[in-house]
Image (cartoon, rainbow, N blue to C red; front, side):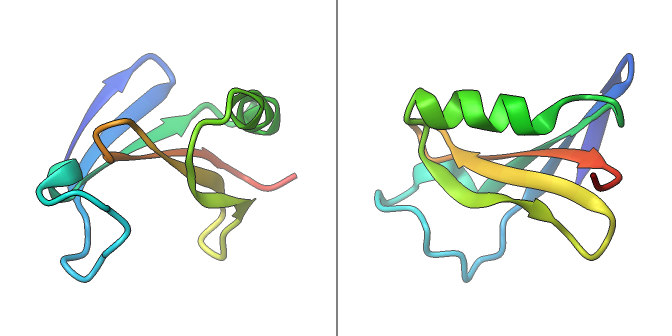
Length: 90
């Protein structure tokens, strides 16, 4: 796992669970998950709604997690998982 911080946003690179079978193509996504930690005041729900309107494939619906984040995960055309998370619940 590694991370890069840009202003108030942190981008984390981590490997996905080897048992994750959510990809449909061999080698797709290369077992990598990218997590973008957004600033606490970021309107993650509006961003999520916009991606849904654009019919971006959602791998994990938006929700409040027990560890304190509100997040969701999308799947890009190469089947990489990108999780957008904001600390704190609404």
